[in-house]
Length: 261
View 1 (cartoon, rainbow, N blue to C red):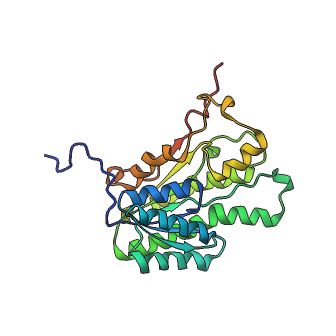
View 2: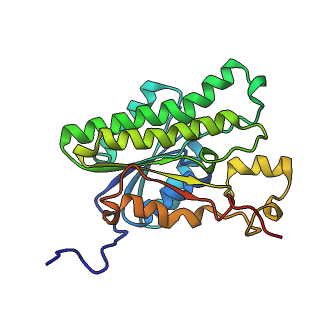
View 3: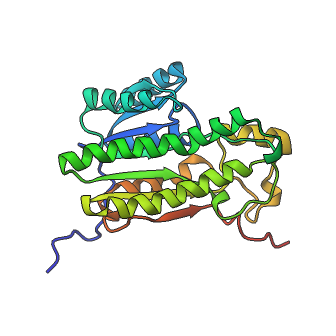
């Protein structure tokens, strides 16, 4: 006889503490608001403090709990400090969303070394260090947790256009997800990834300005918005996904399919 409810799914995150990077705009901003709306206390991490403060006001105004943690993803000490600040204000972090990222928007052979280092630092080094820092504390406390990495559909397909290093880092994030899920399976830490396709966000705004409206070039002739990732995120941080670890879930609205005219 099962003790599980029917159906075994819930989005209740009361008592959980989440740390979200890249929370000042785009997908990260939406992720933070969604987690808070379901009861999680959320630490908002990004460089732009004014935007974080505005988001804290919006979340608390809606009855949620959030703090702003200004953070430079390229500063290793700041990454540890962000986890310290979150724990001091909200309690131990048991939900980690590695969302911060940056595009390269440049042909590989034209990229200066400084830009290469920056893209690798933001897109790969910071998620690695933060995941390890959160996992180390969960393991020491013998507490389970959830880490959600944001990869990209570029992990599966790259058609050129000047984002090769971005694609490489997002493939690395997918592999990191798989490897760390094995590393920490014994500790009850689930590590999964979402691989979004082209969504409306601050990052894609610049691309749309360069190439125009891409809707006519994709199968469903639309570009989805951040709210359409809510269910995937909540699934990966809720008890319903307790047996799911090492998964990369592609959410691309059929963009990888060839458009049929």
